[in-house]
Length: 113
Image (cartoon, rainbow, N blue to C red; front, side, top):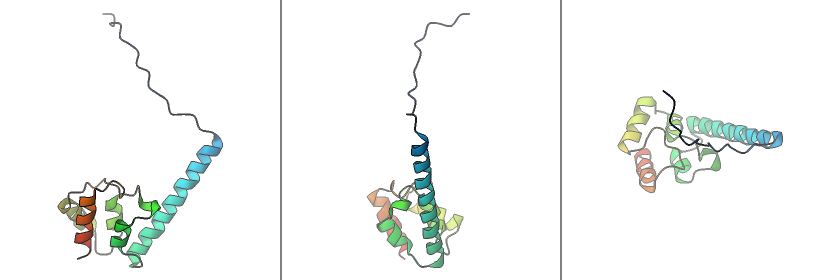
């Protein structure tokens, strides 16, 4: 049986980027990853407190998952971190910038104890 005449859907394409634009984006992404790794190491060492990071997040953690940051805190493994997020009604895939004011406040309250 022949197909019925259906309109063709055109999917918009992302704009082409020049080699220079791609390299600049790659450099920025690498800088953010490096800065984020340094911050997580500082959290592990106790040089930085998670409540400070969540209350006034630096630009490098804007797109970081909250779960990843909590896992960098000493005494927080996967089970304890997931329970914390569950109590605060925060998805494990939630980013720091994606937190609502209520979620941020609940996390800060729970982590400051």
